[in-house]
Image (cartoon, rainbow, N blue to C red):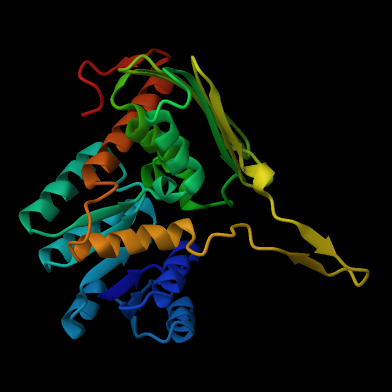
Length: 323
């Protein structure tokens, strides 16, 4: 498979690094707007730098376009790739709103290309295994679910803090938990949310009632000093818990003030590798998708409902679930 990556930032380089480790994958190019960074990244991964997707498509026989750019730019790249009959991998969230997401899904379907969305949480063992345990009856009938996710406040003048570009806290950060909830418990019945904004910090508190009766409380934060995530999944027969801090690797500091740290994951294949490997298997007709573009649309719709509830101070109901 011949792959090209759009984006030279942290995520783009993570994908490039992962692709470079895979057998049967050739990185045929990288695209970025920052020309200095583009040249550096292309040299690092021994691939060709391109200034535009149009140029790359014209000069290569690329199979997959991997989009690792800010949310507001996804649409233009997806349309161009789909119209050129190239399969697409796109980072979450798929689009800035559900209306755009629906249009992008239709464009890809009309052109007969796969649109695979990077909801990576489905490939993290802590979350995938918890879902399997719930479905296998480990906690009995699910009752109350508590989930949290927090990161430092975005940098000054970052596109993340512009809701028109990132979708804000609920979409950019919350879409992880929203997708996992729908994947695990099914459709949503009602949402109530509150958003608290202060200088250099932001919180989101969301209560979701699922169609199956499960109640989920999600706490989102752009106010942490470092990444954090946790969950408590309670049913009438037990509870499953997880806290990211508990998996902090062992660190050793020498007398010379040098710190050594073991890798955070002991997995031979980390979640990002597992995700991209899965996408390759889909495109090779070896398996069915764990996550679809329509799943990604549902997560966006839930984020929009949470934002609407926070703005109006009223619950938002889904008469037929998140469709």
